[in-house]
Image (cartoon, rainbow, N blue to C red):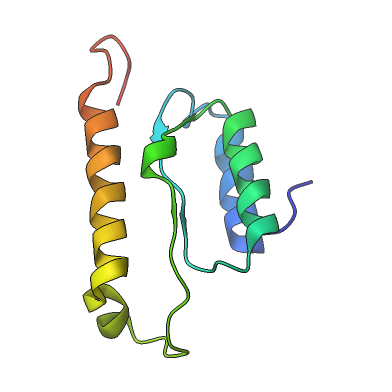
Length: 104
C-alpha cells in the first residue's frame, strides 16, 4: 500500500498503474514542503516502481517560505521561482529528448 502522501494521489496512481500510462514517461517531483521527506521518498519509490522515468534534475524541494498559502508571493519569490524554472526546463528537455519510437 502506498503511504506518506495524500489519499487522492494514491487513488490516482492506483487507477493508472494497471494501464501502464506512466511507463517510460518523464516525471518531475516538486516537493512543496521541506519537512515531508518521508512522503517525497515514498512517492519517488512508487513512481520508480511504476516504471516512470524520474528526471532527477527536474525534481526539486522548495525552501520553506512564509506561512502564507497564497500562490502569488510563493511564485514571485526569486529563489523559489528560479528553482521552479530550472525544474521545468529540465523536464521539458527530458520530454524533447525522448526517442520518437516511444509514445508521449
